[in-house]
Image (tube, rainbow over all chains, first blue to last red; front, side, top):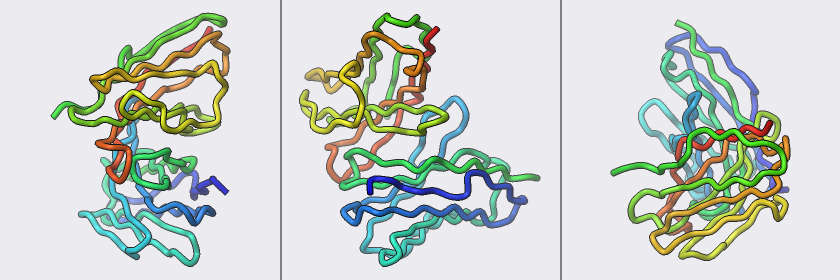
Length: 112
Length: 113
């Protein structure tokens, strides 16, 4: 019940395309859902986060869509760029600063 | 504002030894959490400290321990190292460990020979 399932494991998108990564959770007590971006040799960097009282949040080219009834949330990267090539992790927690439960990650490659 | 600083960046140890990793949080942040990242298990929560007290603990054996000092800096210790402890150890800080987001350092890469 503590798991967060993330798909796909890897994704190849052409420059300018839309990248979509999906996550699903079981624990309805989760109330904070962040996405992190990680480059090789670096720690995860917070991209964008959402709480269950909002169905969508947009920051620049990054959008989180949240479906509370389906217990799913997704990250959309619009106009994907080669610089977006990285590993993306979804996560969930009860409270933003507490133990984050991470998905297994998606490796995104944006081809130019 | 400086980010989360972890030292050292790389460590090589042998089985049976012990190791101490250090984390300096973002200035003003009082909550520090530790995570283990491996290719097989991904990112897993180890423990969280707030105001020098362990507030939350993940599912790791007692060989993994930590502490937090009055200036919010934190250390993590692993005793009797095993080959499976080879991983990237990440520290994250947040203002209060409540509803403020966590920001990660670049980690310490621990290799066990």
